[in-house]
Length: 379
Image 1 (tube, helix red, strand yellow):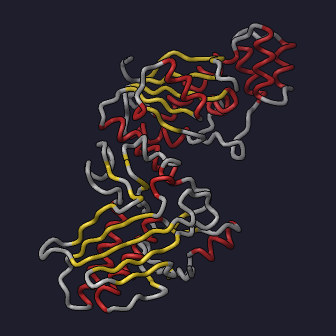
Image 2 (image 1 turned 60 degrees about the vertical axis):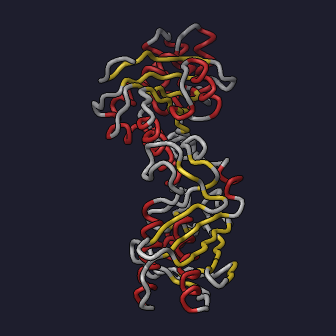
Image 3 (image 1 turned 120 degrees about the vertical axis):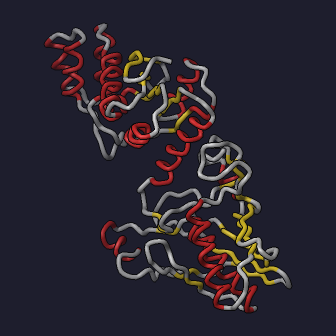
């Protein structure tokens, strides 16, 4: 695949960061569709095939597969996600196009490896193939332009598939979002920015939307599988109400600020929750650190004396600070939970959401919690 995207494209991004950007599944599906429909109209596959992205870039893609029948054409692109750790990197994205029924316009269907929407709350209706609106528009624009060039009515049936997509989808949020049978065809710009984690954050937002559409008034945002397991032991929450927050506390809180639910539980390991307590919205170890001086201040508020306070301030880790307080009978875990809840409420800026928090240790034992507080009525 070539990367001729013009000024401000992948080459500029590589110069700035040393990391290569890549292409979304939506861009790959558009390229495959463009090549397949060109072949259906002319008998020849363009290779490489050039498409236009929403912000004006014009990348070219090499074809990995091509087949031409009497009434259909199929082209496939190998997705290059650049240096982003994307589960769909090197996946084969296929588009099979046929002439549609007169007056039908452009229609989309899910082939093998592409999911189907089964729950409300996503930007597509239940029963639709999981091909998001922007990729649909990109493909629609491409085939409409080709049809006009060849004097044909734009009645085109497009089927998108991804080899091994159903297996890959098990490593995404799709099952929890009610997208069954495979992957989603995604992308708003066509470009994957390495380590932007945009897909994860988009999944958090979609998870909230699905929970709201399903009528769930209580959601839980968890930093990992252990904290999620603890939460489900404390509250009878269905899968649709569980948000895989990871390190992105800010993404959860900013979205709930605009799309509130009545109750939010935030659960995570003590170290990550101590970062939230200190006001950090990104809990990744490379982007925020545990502040033991801050933990010492919290410990003073729950009864720590001068000697213990000094020891906490000199601790080499959050866990070390916690263990010192546990040995002294000082409830630092509760203090962190309360401060984390209050930091979340500040980030919510008065949105009608009640928040409670749970801190756990590495073994999954609850070491601190804060009772619900906030602008909404308790659930």
